[in-house]
Image: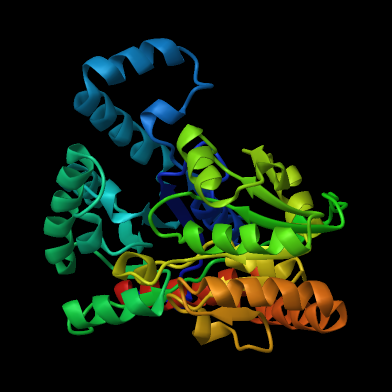
Length: 384
């Protein structure tokens, strides 16, 4: 059968997606929004059982999940995959993150008729050293499934050059690998900027081990003595541990604004209104395998961005597009903040250049178009 003679369209089923617009979820939702309609392509998301809090009878199902976690999720997975399968189209099951790949899910998907891809956003081996016992067990299972991927995976999706090279090496280029970078959607920036004061620095996202908060918190502590009007805005999950960490580095905590979780609209208002955006990624194997998801959105705002050069940052940016520093260099961060405040014209120019680079590499419409071409080529080979 020739793919070019059969025009059935595509159905992409992404599993799973969380209830909140985290950076990872946003990357997938941006992709899905732009894929819809391309050659009659349909996209669906499947949530994990416990995330479906708006389902009829959610409380009963949630209780089942607690008492019969694995059986309940097996039943739910089978039901969801069967329900989403479209016999009139080519069907692709898109596993987001390897930890969700299990033998049962793969077997059911294959029986139903899905082609399979796995989106890898982190290095599974490095994840073995962190997380709970349950998480480590899940990663061990994925490592097993990863080793036998030639038996069921049609192609891999990865978020970084690091992972692309690793997967290609692991399988001797026998499985195609597609680099799908972080994305942003232009429509998200059609909001009025939120103002925080005369000079505001913003970090939004995870407070996990991939990020070097010591460096930029120490830099802010030094800067605020000469620029007492500055404000450091922090968004995301801010618990007592985060606040204790901030207090251990910043003596005058009045310069810190804890914004907490923001709606998507409020978040984009915040990054548009901030004067300086911070991306303090660590230089570890774990951090380098992934990519700072929010960097695309920071750049797209057009505001000056200070970012470490971990992962693939130098694949996309130069010193003319953003303020780049080696991870952990507090003095460089402090110097850049001072420079941006004292040289607003040059800072604005560099922010504009960063926005242009974001448009070239991370615009969700361009990313989705390139990915769709790749998917059609994969299916053409399978069904030729």
